Image: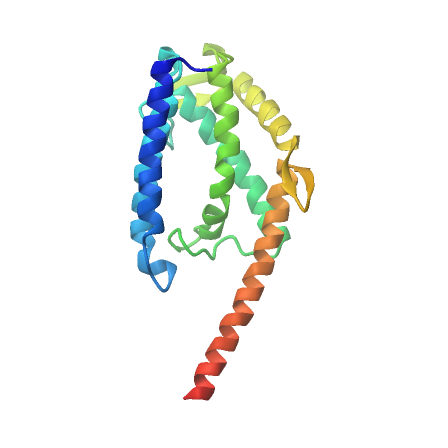
Length: 219
């Protein structure tokens, strides 16, 4: 439903992201850490292309200069940051309920009190927040009353928080994700994915233990 110029812009961005995806899939390493820096580099490049495309198709007064955090430099990023904070909370709760420690990850860097697994696991679900925020701005539902500009950047006001929370919760409650031949809510999909991930970790852990024992026996 976009005009031709915006359609071409989106297609160009999509093609560029596909190119970086192809480069990512061509990487080889025995363990994630062998290619982690390159993975993060390609992710960062693709993210820059992605967010620029989102900005370029918005109405001019809503456009933004890439991602900005702590603090946000514009209303779009202020909405994104608050939405991601909500998603982090939901995702961490899902991981803990599934028995997964949120601080032991495999792609994001491990560090003191850093929730590496949470950052790893949340990636496929970030688009939930991005969709909701983009819809709010593309439908011109965000006004000056929704954000507050300070010397430290842009933050959501009470009306902005209320708008985002209502829209995001409604989006998470929609039964739009397929799981075992039935549609479940996005909120439940995150929880089910955490349980499935925990089971896979156990399976892979058992397989690795067997491999180690076989190597020791062979030697």
